[in-house]
Length: 480
Image 1 (cartoon, rainbow, N blue to C red):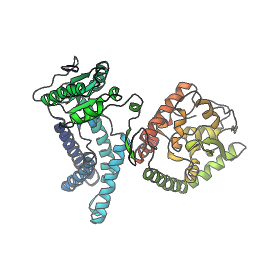
Image 2: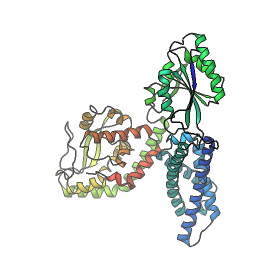
Image 3: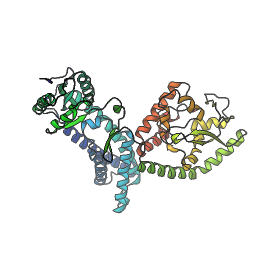
Image 4: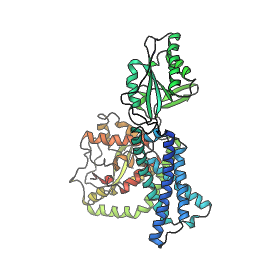
Protein backbone atom coordinates (compact mmCIF):
# COMPACT_ATOMS: atom_id res chain seq x y z
CA UNK A 1 0.00 0.00 0.00
CA UNK A 2 1.26 3.48 -0.83
CA UNK A 3 -0.04 4.92 2.44
CA UNK A 4 1.02 3.58 5.80
CA UNK A 5 -1.34 3.75 8.75
CA UNK A 6 -0.08 3.15 12.27
CA UNK A 7 -2.07 2.67 15.41
CA UNK A 8 0.08 3.56 18.34
CA UNK A 9 0.30 4.85 21.87
CA UNK A 10 2.54 7.88 22.21
CA UNK A 11 5.58 7.47 24.49
CA UNK A 12 4.09 10.24 26.61
CA UNK A 13 0.59 8.78 26.57
CA UNK A 14 -1.32 9.15 29.84
CA UNK A 15 -3.09 5.94 30.72
CA UNK A 16 -6.80 6.61 31.08
CA UNK A 17 -8.78 4.85 33.76
CA UNK A 18 -11.71 2.73 32.61
CA UNK A 19 -13.80 4.80 35.01
CA UNK A 20 -12.51 8.11 33.61
CA UNK A 21 -14.89 11.03 33.49
CA UNK A 22 -16.09 12.46 30.20
CA UNK A 23 -15.28 16.04 29.29
CA UNK A 24 -19.01 16.77 29.22
CA UNK A 25 -19.26 15.43 32.77
CA UNK A 26 -16.39 17.66 33.90
CA UNK A 27 -18.10 20.68 32.32
CA UNK A 28 -21.40 19.84 34.03
CA UNK A 29 -19.61 19.48 37.38
CA UNK A 30 -17.88 22.86 36.92
CA UNK A 31 -21.25 24.44 36.10
CA UNK A 32 -22.88 23.04 39.23
CA UNK A 33 -19.89 23.96 41.43
CA UNK A 34 -19.93 27.59 40.28
CA UNK A 35 -23.72 27.88 40.58
CA UNK A 36 -23.76 26.37 44.07
CA UNK A 37 -20.75 28.41 45.21
CA UNK A 38 -22.33 31.72 44.21
CA UNK A 39 -25.54 30.78 46.04
CA UNK A 40 -23.52 29.82 49.13
CA UNK A 41 -21.56 33.11 49.01
CA UNK A 42 -24.87 35.00 48.94
CA UNK A 43 -26.20 32.95 51.84
CA UNK A 44 -23.04 33.34 53.93
CA UNK A 45 -22.57 37.08 53.31
CA UNK A 46 -26.26 37.77 53.90
CA UNK A 47 -26.40 35.97 57.22
CA UNK A 48 -23.03 37.36 58.38
CA UNK A 49 -23.86 40.95 57.38
CA UNK A 50 -27.25 40.99 59.07
CA UNK A 51 -25.93 39.32 62.22
CA UNK A 52 -23.17 41.92 62.45
CA UNK A 53 -25.31 44.97 61.62
CA UNK A 54 -28.75 44.05 62.96
CA UNK A 55 -28.00 41.27 65.43
CA UNK A 56 -30.07 38.66 63.56
CA UNK A 57 -29.52 36.47 60.50
CA UNK A 58 -32.42 37.94 58.52
CA UNK A 59 -34.24 36.36 55.60
CA UNK A 60 -32.13 33.34 54.70
CA UNK A 61 -34.48 32.32 51.89
CA UNK A 62 -34.10 35.73 50.27
CA UNK A 63 -30.30 35.49 50.27
CA UNK A 64 -30.49 32.04 48.71
CA UNK A 65 -32.92 33.25 46.03
CA UNK A 66 -30.77 36.24 45.08
CA UNK A 67 -27.66 34.05 45.09
CA UNK A 68 -29.38 31.46 42.93
CA UNK A 69 -30.45 34.09 40.38
CA UNK A 70 -26.95 35.62 40.35
CA UNK A 71 -25.38 32.19 39.95
CA UNK A 72 -27.76 31.22 37.17
CA UNK A 73 -27.10 34.46 35.30
CA UNK A 74 -23.34 34.16 35.67
CA UNK A 75 -23.07 30.50 34.69
CA UNK A 76 -25.54 30.85 31.80
CA UNK A 77 -23.34 33.51 30.18
CA UNK A 78 -20.53 30.95 29.84
CA UNK A 79 -22.80 27.97 29.21
CA UNK A 80 -24.35 29.61 26.14
CA UNK A 81 -20.85 30.04 24.64
CA UNK A 82 -19.98 26.40 25.37
CA UNK A 83 -17.23 27.51 27.75
CA UNK A 84 -17.77 24.76 30.30
CA UNK A 85 -16.05 22.20 28.09
CA UNK A 86 -12.84 21.09 29.79
CA UNK A 87 -10.68 22.18 26.86
CA UNK A 88 -12.35 25.59 26.65
CA UNK A 89 -11.75 26.26 30.34
CA UNK A 90 -8.07 25.33 30.05
CA UNK A 91 -7.52 27.62 27.06
CA UNK A 92 -7.77 30.62 29.39
CA UNK A 93 -10.57 32.42 27.54
CA UNK A 94 -12.07 33.58 30.83
CA UNK A 95 -9.85 36.57 31.48
CA UNK A 96 -10.29 38.56 34.71
CA UNK A 97 -11.76 41.36 32.62
CA UNK A 98 -14.42 39.09 31.13
CA UNK A 99 -15.28 37.69 34.54
CA UNK A 100 -15.55 41.21 35.97
CA UNK A 101 -17.80 42.33 33.11
CA UNK A 102 -20.03 39.25 33.35
CA UNK A 103 -20.40 39.63 37.11
CA UNK A 104 -21.20 43.33 36.70
CA UNK A 105 -23.83 42.61 34.04
CA UNK A 106 -25.40 39.99 36.32
CA UNK A 107 -25.86 42.59 39.06
CA UNK A 108 -27.18 45.09 36.55
CA UNK A 109 -29.75 42.50 35.51
CA UNK A 110 -30.66 41.78 39.14
CA UNK A 111 -31.12 45.50 39.77
CA UNK A 112 -33.41 45.77 36.75
CA UNK A 113 -35.46 42.78 37.93
CA UNK A 114 -35.73 44.31 41.40
CA UNK A 115 -36.86 47.64 39.93
CA UNK A 116 -39.48 46.07 37.64
CA UNK A 117 -40.87 43.88 40.41
CA UNK A 118 -40.71 46.74 42.97
CA UNK A 119 -38.82 44.47 45.37
CA UNK A 120 -35.62 46.47 45.88
CA UNK A 121 -36.84 47.62 49.31
CA UNK A 122 -36.61 44.01 50.52
CA UNK A 123 -32.81 43.93 50.21
CA UNK A 124 -30.14 45.65 52.24
CA UNK A 125 -27.95 47.78 49.99
CA UNK A 126 -25.03 47.18 52.32
CA UNK A 127 -25.38 43.41 51.96
CA UNK A 128 -25.69 43.67 48.16
CA UNK A 129 -22.43 45.61 48.04
CA UNK A 130 -20.73 43.00 50.24
CA UNK A 131 -22.16 40.22 48.05
CA UNK A 132 -20.96 41.95 44.87
CA UNK A 133 -17.38 42.29 46.14
CA UNK A 134 -17.26 38.86 47.82
CA UNK A 135 -18.89 37.18 44.86
CA UNK A 136 -16.46 38.78 42.40
CA UNK A 137 -13.50 37.62 44.48
CA UNK A 138 -15.12 34.20 44.78
CA UNK A 139 -15.68 33.64 41.05
CA UNK A 140 -12.14 34.83 40.23
CA UNK A 141 -10.62 32.41 42.75
CA UNK A 142 -13.01 29.63 41.74
CA UNK A 143 -12.16 30.01 38.05
CA UNK A 144 -8.44 29.68 38.82
CA UNK A 145 -9.07 26.69 41.10
CA UNK A 146 -11.19 24.91 38.49
CA UNK A 147 -8.51 25.40 35.84
CA UNK A 148 -5.84 23.98 38.14
CA UNK A 149 -8.08 21.09 39.19
CA UNK A 150 -9.08 20.13 35.64
CA UNK A 151 -5.46 20.27 34.48
CA UNK A 152 -4.46 18.05 37.41
CA UNK A 153 -7.05 15.35 36.88
CA UNK A 154 -6.43 15.36 33.14
CA UNK A 155 -2.72 14.81 33.72
CA UNK A 156 -3.62 11.87 36.00
CA UNK A 157 -5.71 10.25 33.26
CA UNK A 158 -9.02 10.68 35.08
CA UNK A 159 -10.67 12.44 32.13
CA UNK A 160 -11.25 10.96 28.69
CA UNK A 161 -9.50 12.96 26.00
CA UNK A 162 -10.87 13.32 22.49
CA UNK A 163 -9.27 10.83 20.08
CA UNK A 164 -7.41 12.46 17.22
CA UNK A 165 -6.13 11.09 13.90
CA UNK A 166 -3.43 13.01 12.04
CA UNK A 167 -3.30 12.97 8.24
CA UNK A 168 0.08 14.34 7.18
CA UNK A 169 3.33 13.77 5.33
CA UNK A 170 5.59 11.39 7.23
CA UNK A 171 8.10 14.20 7.80
CA UNK A 172 5.43 16.47 9.24
CA UNK A 173 3.38 14.04 11.35
CA UNK A 174 5.70 13.71 14.36
CA UNK A 175 5.98 17.45 15.00
CA UNK A 176 2.22 17.87 14.49
CA UNK A 177 1.55 15.05 16.97
CA UNK A 178 3.81 16.70 19.54
CA UNK A 179 2.03 20.05 19.20
CA UNK A 180 -1.38 18.46 19.75
CA UNK A 181 -0.34 16.18 22.60
CA UNK A 182 1.53 18.82 24.57
CA UNK A 183 -0.47 20.65 27.20
CA UNK A 184 -3.79 19.71 28.76
CA UNK A 185 -6.30 20.74 26.11
CA UNK A 186 -8.22 17.46 26.16
CA UNK A 187 -6.97 15.95 22.87
CA UNK A 188 -4.70 13.00 22.22
CA UNK A 189 -3.33 11.62 18.95
CA UNK A 190 -3.93 7.88 18.80
CA UNK A 191 -3.61 7.26 15.04
CA UNK A 192 -1.62 8.64 12.16
CA UNK A 193 -1.99 8.40 8.39
CA UNK A 194 1.35 8.99 6.71
CA UNK A 195 0.85 10.20 3.14
CA UNK A 196 3.70 9.34 0.74
CA UNK A 197 5.15 12.18 -1.30
CA UNK A 198 4.58 10.15 -4.46
CA UNK A 199 0.79 9.81 -4.03
CA UNK A 200 -0.58 11.97 -6.86
CA UNK A 201 -2.91 9.73 -8.86
CA UNK A 202 -6.58 9.47 -7.80
CA UNK A 203 -6.39 5.70 -7.30
CA UNK A 204 -3.30 6.02 -5.11
CA UNK A 205 -4.90 8.72 -2.97
CA UNK A 206 -8.17 6.80 -2.65
CA UNK A 207 -6.30 3.71 -1.45
CA UNK A 208 -4.74 5.73 1.39
CA UNK A 209 -8.01 7.42 2.29
CA UNK A 210 -10.16 4.28 2.24
CA UNK A 211 -7.84 2.61 4.75
CA UNK A 212 -7.73 5.76 6.90
CA UNK A 213 -11.52 6.05 7.04
CA UNK A 214 -11.88 2.39 8.06
CA UNK A 215 -9.25 2.87 10.73
CA UNK A 216 -10.88 6.03 12.07
CA UNK A 217 -14.28 4.34 12.29
CA UNK A 218 -12.83 1.31 14.07
CA UNK A 219 -10.93 3.41 16.64
CA UNK A 220 -13.84 5.75 17.35
CA UNK A 221 -11.89 8.83 16.29
CA UNK A 222 -13.42 12.15 17.38
CA UNK A 223 -11.28 14.57 15.36
CA UNK A 224 -9.26 14.29 12.14
CA UNK A 225 -6.52 16.88 11.61
CA UNK A 226 -5.18 17.33 8.06
CA UNK A 227 -1.77 18.98 7.78
CA UNK A 228 -1.35 22.17 5.75
CA UNK A 229 1.77 20.61 4.19
CA UNK A 230 -0.64 18.74 1.89
CA UNK A 231 -2.41 21.86 0.61
CA UNK A 232 -0.52 21.98 -2.65
CA UNK A 233 -1.47 18.41 -3.60
CA UNK A 234 -4.77 16.99 -4.89
CA UNK A 235 -5.04 15.10 -1.61
CA UNK A 236 -6.79 17.64 0.62
CA UNK A 237 -10.11 18.02 -1.17
CA UNK A 238 -10.44 14.25 -1.62
CA UNK A 239 -9.57 13.76 2.07
CA UNK A 240 -12.28 16.20 3.16
CA UNK A 241 -14.84 14.38 1.03
CA UNK A 242 -13.72 10.98 2.29
CA UNK A 243 -13.82 11.82 6.03
CA UNK A 244 -17.17 13.60 5.72
CA UNK A 245 -18.87 10.21 5.85
CA UNK A 246 -17.82 9.92 9.51
CA UNK A 247 -19.52 11.64 12.50
CA UNK A 248 -16.32 13.52 13.39
CA UNK A 249 -14.91 17.04 13.56
CA UNK A 250 -12.64 17.74 10.59
CA UNK A 251 -9.80 20.29 10.87
CA UNK A 252 -7.18 21.80 8.56
CA UNK A 253 -4.00 23.06 10.22
CA UNK A 254 -2.70 26.52 9.44
CA UNK A 255 0.75 27.64 8.40
CA UNK A 256 3.26 29.21 10.73
CA UNK A 257 2.13 32.68 9.62
CA UNK A 258 -1.54 32.10 10.44
CA UNK A 259 -0.97 30.38 13.79
CA UNK A 260 0.64 33.57 15.12
CA UNK A 261 -2.83 35.13 15.23
CA UNK A 262 -5.03 33.61 17.93
CA UNK A 263 -8.24 35.18 16.54
CA UNK A 264 -7.75 34.05 12.94
CA UNK A 265 -11.07 32.97 11.44
CA UNK A 266 -12.83 32.29 8.16
CA UNK A 267 -14.50 35.32 6.58
CA UNK A 268 -16.42 35.81 3.34
CA UNK A 269 -16.31 38.73 0.93
CA UNK A 270 -19.17 37.99 -1.43
CA UNK A 271 -18.32 34.60 -2.90
CA UNK A 272 -14.68 34.80 -1.83
CA UNK A 273 -13.61 33.00 1.35
CA UNK A 274 -10.57 34.30 3.22
CA UNK A 275 -8.68 33.66 6.44
CA UNK A 276 -8.97 36.86 8.51
CA UNK A 277 -5.81 37.17 10.59
CA UNK A 278 -6.75 40.22 12.63
CA UNK A 279 -9.62 42.58 13.22
CA UNK A 280 -9.72 46.14 14.53
CA UNK A 281 -8.96 46.08 18.27
CA UNK A 282 -12.49 47.40 18.89
CA UNK A 283 -15.59 46.78 16.81
CA UNK A 284 -18.08 49.55 16.06
CA UNK A 285 -20.31 48.77 19.05
CA UNK A 286 -17.33 48.23 21.38
CA UNK A 287 -15.74 51.53 20.34
CA UNK A 288 -19.03 53.39 20.83
CA UNK A 289 -19.52 51.81 24.28
CA UNK A 290 -15.96 52.66 25.34
CA UNK A 291 -16.32 56.24 24.09
CA UNK A 292 -19.65 56.69 25.87
CA UNK A 293 -18.19 55.38 29.13
CA UNK A 294 -15.11 57.62 28.76
CA UNK A 295 -17.19 60.75 28.21
CA UNK A 296 -19.58 60.04 31.08
CA UNK A 297 -16.86 59.09 33.58
CA UNK A 298 -14.45 61.91 32.57
CA UNK A 299 -17.20 64.55 32.63
CA UNK A 300 -18.42 63.44 36.06
CA UNK A 301 -14.84 63.26 37.41
CA UNK A 302 -14.04 66.80 36.21
CA UNK A 303 -17.17 68.13 37.86
CA UNK A 304 -16.47 66.40 41.18
CA UNK A 305 -12.75 67.19 41.18
CA UNK A 306 -13.00 70.85 40.17
CA UNK A 307 -12.32 72.09 43.76
CA UNK A 308 -9.22 69.86 43.88
CA UNK A 309 -8.06 71.27 40.53
CA UNK A 310 -8.36 74.80 41.93
CA UNK A 311 -6.42 73.90 45.08
CA UNK A 312 -3.60 72.25 43.11
CA UNK A 313 -3.39 75.23 40.78
CA UNK A 314 -2.92 77.61 43.74
CA UNK A 315 -0.21 75.38 45.26
CA UNK A 316 1.69 75.20 41.97
CA UNK A 317 1.67 78.99 41.55
CA UNK A 318 2.84 79.51 45.15
CA UNK A 319 5.58 76.86 44.90
CA UNK A 320 7.39 77.98 41.74
CA UNK A 321 7.11 80.39 38.81
CA UNK A 322 5.56 79.14 35.60
CA UNK A 323 2.23 77.94 34.19
CA UNK A 324 -0.18 75.70 36.09
CA UNK A 325 -0.48 73.22 33.22
CA UNK A 326 2.20 71.51 31.21
CA UNK A 327 1.39 70.58 27.62
CA UNK A 328 3.53 68.26 25.53
CA UNK A 329 3.19 66.68 22.09
CA UNK A 330 2.24 63.03 22.21
CA UNK A 331 1.13 60.52 19.61
CA UNK A 332 -2.38 59.17 19.80
CA UNK A 333 -4.52 56.76 17.83
CA UNK A 334 -2.94 55.86 14.47
CA UNK A 335 0.05 58.18 15.22
CA UNK A 336 -2.06 61.38 15.21
CA UNK A 337 -0.35 63.97 17.38
CA UNK A 338 -2.06 65.89 20.18
CA UNK A 339 -1.03 67.93 23.19
CA UNK A 340 -1.39 66.14 26.52
CA UNK A 341 -2.49 68.09 29.60
CA UNK A 342 -0.73 67.64 32.95
CA UNK A 343 -0.23 69.71 36.06
CA UNK A 344 3.26 71.21 35.87
CA UNK A 345 5.61 69.37 38.23
CA UNK A 346 9.03 70.48 36.95
CA UNK A 347 10.93 73.69 36.29
CA UNK A 348 11.58 72.59 32.69
CA UNK A 349 8.98 72.24 29.92
CA UNK A 350 10.73 69.92 27.43
CA UNK A 351 8.86 69.35 24.16
CA UNK A 352 11.47 69.16 21.44
CA UNK A 353 13.54 66.51 19.69
CA UNK A 354 15.23 65.66 23.00
CA UNK A 355 13.06 65.00 26.08
CA UNK A 356 14.90 63.90 29.23
CA UNK A 357 12.81 61.55 31.40
CA UNK A 358 12.37 62.36 35.08
CA UNK A 359 14.59 60.31 37.36
CA UNK A 360 14.65 59.65 41.09
CA UNK A 361 15.67 62.79 43.03
CA UNK A 362 15.55 64.82 39.80
CA UNK A 363 16.50 68.43 40.63
CA UNK A 364 13.99 69.75 38.08
CA UNK A 365 11.02 68.43 40.09
CA UNK A 366 9.42 71.03 42.34
CA UNK A 367 8.30 70.40 45.93
CA UNK A 368 4.60 70.34 45.01
CA UNK A 369 5.46 68.50 41.81
CA UNK A 370 7.10 65.69 43.78
CA UNK A 371 3.88 65.14 45.72
CA UNK A 372 1.73 65.34 42.59
CA UNK A 373 3.86 62.82 40.71
CA UNK A 374 3.99 60.32 43.58
CA UNK A 375 0.21 60.44 43.97
CA UNK A 376 -0.39 60.59 40.18
CA UNK A 377 -2.50 63.73 40.70
CA UNK A 378 -0.48 65.41 37.95
CA UNK A 379 -2.26 63.16 35.45
CA UNK A 380 -5.79 64.37 36.30
CA UNK A 381 -5.93 67.14 33.63
CA UNK A 382 -5.81 64.38 31.02
CA UNK A 383 -9.52 64.01 31.69
CA UNK A 384 -9.73 67.01 29.34
CA UNK A 385 -7.95 64.96 26.65
CA UNK A 386 -10.45 62.17 27.26
CA UNK A 387 -13.42 64.52 26.76
CA UNK A 388 -11.84 65.84 23.55
CA UNK A 389 -11.55 62.27 22.23
CA UNK A 390 -7.74 62.32 22.07
CA UNK A 391 -7.34 59.79 24.90
CA UNK A 392 -9.29 57.14 26.77
CA UNK A 393 -9.43 56.43 30.48
CA UNK A 394 -7.65 53.12 29.81
CA UNK A 395 -5.08 52.37 27.14
CA UNK A 396 -1.31 52.36 26.52
CA UNK A 397 0.29 55.41 28.12
CA UNK A 398 1.33 57.98 25.46
CA UNK A 399 5.03 58.81 25.29
CA UNK A 400 6.72 61.98 24.17
CA UNK A 401 7.05 62.09 20.38
CA UNK A 402 10.85 62.09 20.71
CA UNK A 403 10.69 58.85 22.71
CA UNK A 404 8.31 57.25 20.20
CA UNK A 405 10.73 57.99 17.39
CA UNK A 406 13.61 56.52 19.40
CA UNK A 407 11.94 53.24 20.40
CA UNK A 408 10.00 52.50 17.21
CA UNK A 409 13.36 51.95 15.46
CA UNK A 410 14.45 49.45 18.12
CA UNK A 411 11.32 47.50 19.08
CA UNK A 412 9.60 45.87 16.12
CA UNK A 413 6.01 45.94 17.41
CA UNK A 414 6.27 49.27 19.22
CA UNK A 415 4.04 51.13 16.69
CA UNK A 416 1.16 48.70 17.46
CA UNK A 417 0.70 50.59 20.74
CA UNK A 418 -1.03 53.28 18.70
CA UNK A 419 -3.74 50.96 17.34
CA UNK A 420 -6.01 52.17 20.16
CA UNK A 421 -6.33 55.52 21.91
CA UNK A 422 -3.74 56.10 24.64
CA UNK A 423 -4.99 56.07 28.22
CA UNK A 424 -4.57 57.80 31.56
CA UNK A 425 -3.88 54.38 33.03
CA UNK A 426 -3.19 51.02 31.42
CA UNK A 427 -2.39 47.33 31.84
CA UNK A 428 1.35 48.05 31.93
CA UNK A 429 0.93 50.67 34.67
CA UNK A 430 -1.13 48.48 37.02
CA UNK A 431 1.52 45.78 36.64
CA UNK A 432 4.26 48.14 37.78
CA UNK A 433 5.67 49.18 34.38
CA UNK A 434 5.37 52.94 34.68
CA UNK A 435 7.66 55.88 35.13
CA UNK A 436 11.22 56.02 33.85
CA UNK A 437 12.40 53.46 31.28
CA UNK A 438 16.16 53.46 31.75
CA UNK A 439 16.82 50.51 29.44
CA UNK A 440 15.42 49.13 26.22
CA UNK A 441 14.39 45.95 28.06
CA UNK A 442 12.22 47.96 30.46
CA UNK A 443 10.42 49.50 27.49
CA UNK A 444 10.00 46.06 25.89
CA UNK A 445 8.24 44.82 29.03
CA UNK A 446 5.92 47.82 28.96
CA UNK A 447 5.19 47.27 25.27
CA UNK A 448 4.40 43.58 25.88
CA UNK A 449 1.75 44.56 28.42
CA UNK A 450 0.37 47.25 26.11
CA UNK A 451 0.03 44.75 23.25
CA UNK A 452 -1.67 42.26 25.58
CA UNK A 453 -4.22 44.96 26.39
CA UNK A 454 -4.79 45.74 22.70
CA UNK A 455 -5.36 42.05 21.92
CA UNK A 456 -7.80 41.64 24.82
CA UNK A 457 -9.38 45.06 25.27
CA UNK A 458 -13.01 45.22 26.35
CA UNK A 459 -15.14 47.36 28.64
CA UNK A 460 -14.87 44.68 31.32
CA UNK A 461 -11.07 44.69 31.07
CA UNK A 462 -11.10 48.50 31.31
CA UNK A 463 -13.17 48.38 34.50
CA UNK A 464 -10.80 45.79 35.96
CA UNK A 465 -7.77 47.99 35.17
CA UNK A 466 -9.46 51.05 36.69
CA UNK A 467 -10.15 49.04 39.84
CA UNK A 468 -6.50 47.93 40.04
CA UNK A 469 -5.37 51.51 39.48
CA UNK A 470 -7.16 52.48 42.67
CA UNK A 471 -6.24 49.52 44.91
CA UNK A 472 -3.11 47.80 43.58
CA UNK A 473 0.28 48.76 45.10
CA UNK A 474 1.88 48.01 41.73
CA UNK A 475 -0.02 50.90 40.15
CA UNK A 476 2.06 53.45 42.11
CA UNK A 477 5.36 51.63 41.73
CA UNK A 478 8.13 53.69 40.09
CA UNK A 479 6.10 56.91 40.26
CA UNK A 480 8.64 59.73 39.94
